[in-house]
Amino acid sequence: MRKTWAALIALIVLATLVTAGPVAAKKPLEGTMDLDFNLGFLDETTECPEVTWAGNIDFDGEIHGMAFIPTALPVVVGQAFHFEDLWMIYEGPFTYSGGVFTECDDPIVMWGYDAGVENLTTLHAVAHGNVEWVDADGPFDVSLTGGNVRWRGVVADTEIEFVGTWRVN
Image: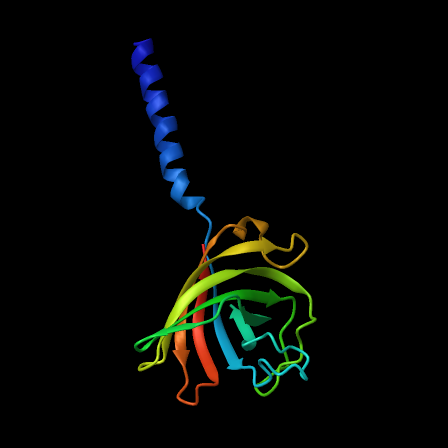
C-alpha cells in the first residue's frame, strides 16, 4: 500500500512539473518596424554615414528607435540581394522621418547581428540573427541575450521605406 501511495504521489509531482513547463515558457518579444533608408548613407559629411536604415520599432505601444549598419558588402545573385547587419534598438523613439539620419548617438538598449536576403523583384526581405547584448538597466529583459531574431517585411516601391515585423525568442 505504501508503494502504491508513493508511486501515486511521484506521478502527481511529475505531472505537475510536465504541465508547468509550457506555462512558464518565455513569451517572444515582437515588434513592428517602420524604417526609412538613410539618404546620408556613405556620405561622410553627415552625422551617421554608416547607418543604412533607421526608424522606429513599436512593441505594443512602447516605441524605440532602431537602426541598421552593414557588416559586410552586400552580394547580388540574380534577383537576390544578400546582406549582413548590426542592428540596434535605442532607448527612446526617433523623431527621424526619412531624409538624412542624425540620431546615431542616442543610448542603445539592445543590439545584435543578422543576415538576410531581399527579393529584388517582390521587394520582400527576411533575415535571421541573434541578440548579442541587452542593457540590464533598460526596458528589455536581459534573458533575451543570445535569443534568436527573425524579421521580415517589404521595401516600398520607392525603395526608401520599409515596414515589417521583428521577433526575438
